[in-house]
Length: 336
Image (cartoon, helix red, strand yellow):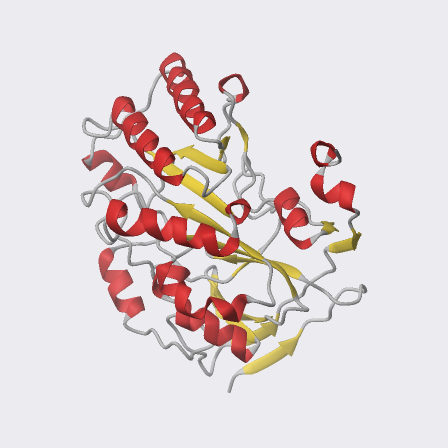
């Protein structure tokens, strides 16, 4: 039978958390009904990818969740039920690159579908809750620095007024994407070329009303007008929820990552976007098998609870501090 163990909460009252939805897959694009159904049910379960018999039960009431961070390349499937998010605070990380079907075979057309979806979502929730990700940047014989600057410029003009911030990163090679990186002939720029590229792309962003940050890059790009970004951003979340957070850095991420701690709710090997640079899918076959298990009413994404599973209520701790004052919320530049 399924074993339920209840882990004790820490001493503070009203434990809360930040939800990451999701670094492991594109829940808004493929599993939005599942996520909305889990909000309605009040909980979801996540299998530990390092110990598959261990399952965390995560409570999802508005009193439990400080903020939801959505990661997606296509949020349009979420639009029909967005009123179900009314009691939650959230923002979107929307990845929109310049690649074609040869690199991102599962995505709808960008000019006809994804750029309009970005603009529609920005109108619904406001540009400050829209983060544009132009990443990862990969250099190949086809996707040259000049290509990326043209593609970025065209998208930046189309998204002007729909976002205030853009994030870039350069592709990292993992075991799951190494073969594809080699096949496409991916290469790295020398430091001088890289800095020249970064200055140029930062200038384009600035000309279109956007600041720019880098994601988990060790190189300091401050001279190019690019800061180190925090994708799960403590300061942004504080502004959205109107409270200080006591959240620390997420120790489960790469050393160069500046994200604060969050609870990941996705499942590996479930994303249908088909990106050649993906680190979250083992193979197309593994994705096909996982997606075949999808049940919009299961507590686990593309899975179910097994008799041998050990289900443990996720420990949470108080992240919020007392409510911020108006000057704290807006900063010095808004006091006048």
